[in-house]
Image (cartoon, rainbow, N blue to C red; front, side, top):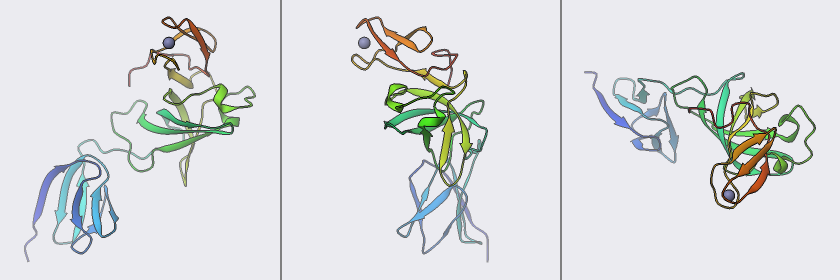
Amino acid sequence: MTEKKECKKVLPGEAVATAEEYMAGFGTYEHDGVIYSSAIGNLELDEKNKMARLDFENPPMAVAVGDKVFCEVKDVRASMVGCDIFAIEGSKRGVTGETDATIHVSKISSKYVEDASMEYRKTDLLRGEVIQARPSIQLTTAGPLYGVVMARCKICREPLERQHGSKLFCPKCERTEYRKVADDYRDVKF
Ligand SMILES: [Zn+2]
């Protein structure tokens, strides 16, 4: 028997094989009998081991405890903030696996926060630190390094300017909003 390998570049969510023919290996997952790619990479269909897997030039990483991550706020309730991690700070690699993260209201700031919606709003971009990676990702934003790095005006969507402390200002609407702001607000390159 000869070993045959195919290689082609695939995108996340692309159907790459059927589960009848192959097992889902590194960088792929099975759903309803179909194997999908979970990242950008080169697909390898390993005939010998009947394994579909991705080969990465810059392998994406799963987040780990202690990572500083950038995320977008998706959902804000009084007791918690739901966000989606899009980058690990200091890493050019993408994020693989789970990217949904939660910030409990008690972990927003070192000061007491009664209601998470007083500090964060949907579409804010923030930096947090991973305090739990499994089974769910939990972040903290307590400390001056953490918090919102880019927020937009609720009315006109223009990026808000930082005035001082937690006070942000929209020059177009001449409105003030408040956030738990990171030290380097609007000075971050993703
Ligand atoms: Zn505005």
